[in-house]
Image (cartoon, rainbow, N blue to C red; front, side, top):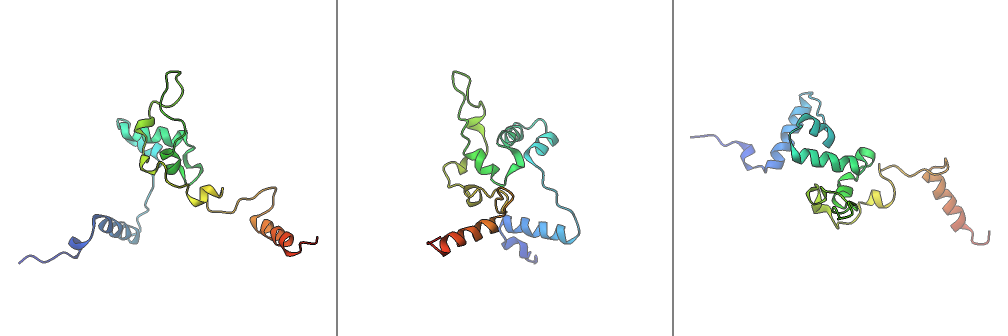
Length: 138
């Protein structure tokens, strides 16, 4: 009688998560490649080439919302006057088109850290707001 494998009851995603956890526990360094690095590794892949082009066009790793930016690309399809992008209809992350702006992008905090302006931190701005709101007579 065959023995039952406890992994058979898991979803493919959960199996992959467990496999990654085992690899990390074994001390293996997990390396994440950018779309450009993936395209370089497989130069004959059209899909990876398109993803790399969109990634570079939208600023690459400049912010954490690059996938949303690619899905909501404002360049648009190629027009008769040669403006637009020939790859617009093939871009990845189209399922994100029309989705709300991620909160960090909407607030201008692309990396999750507070935005600093004029050498002052966001904490200084909060203190200034308290001073303003604290005494309406000043």
